[in-house]
Amino acid sequence: MNGNSFLHSYLNVFLLTALCLITLSGCQAASDNPINQSEQEDSLSSEDRSSADSSSEEKGKTFTAEIIKVIDGDTVKIKMTNGNEETVRLLLIDTPETVHPSKPVQPFGPEASKFAKELMPAGSEVEVETGIGERDKYGRLLAYFYVDGNMVNKLLLEKGLARVAYVYAPNTKYLDELENIQKQAQQDEIGIWSIENYTTSKGFDDSKSKEASVEKPTGSCSNPQIKGNINSKGNKIYHIPTGQYYEITKPEEMFCTEKDAQDAGFRKSQS
Picture 1 (cartoon, rainbow, N blue to C red):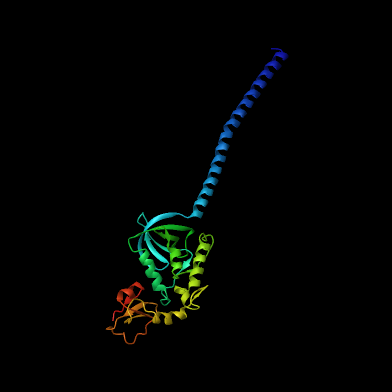
Picture 2: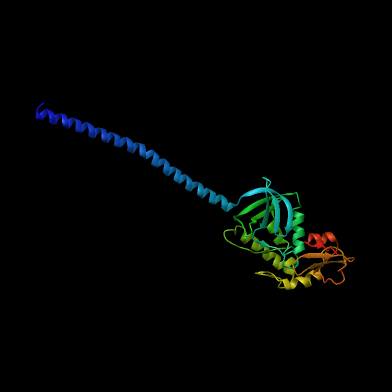
């Protein structure tokens, strides 16, 4: 083989090799593009799902639950459809205390509790709309409750049995509406707004509790005989006239019946 033939053969081999490399590179690029596009689509899909989840969360999740018991005006225990039990704190409202371990029974606390129990008796169903931040620092669910399409949070404000409170973003969905309802109750001077300087921006003035609770007995009788007392440990105990400590007990609240006392969170004295 002469020099020209050898050079010609070498050039042919070089060109063929280069052509193969170009072809393979094109195939690889074609193969890579769908993968990158797929990854991009997955990424966009994840962002879209995140946006959808956020939108859904802002609207609040709604489900039906069974009432186990009303603890007090703004706190309720429910059973979920999966059988789990949850304690729920009604969003954006605060009712006077009836079961607080270190506070006396506050004026209109028993009324708020009774109203909630009548609206949501044990075994009944309630529609629950959870807030965006679903739980408080105690692990309780935060929610709006609906009975027959009516929001319980609003009804308590309308009756003057609650104040607008614990307002924390982002759980402010119904704030304007609830504040307007509260303003009307204030103007009408009903419930908690009927006691001067009782309801404050920080809560309820406990100094009003004793005078109001003794003046206004829980129940429908004109001469209540059952004494409700809160001891130094915060235990709520009621005493009947035949009880050992009845005469020396100074009542924080008077009741017409033992059931009234029990509904207000008191237990019977063992003596």
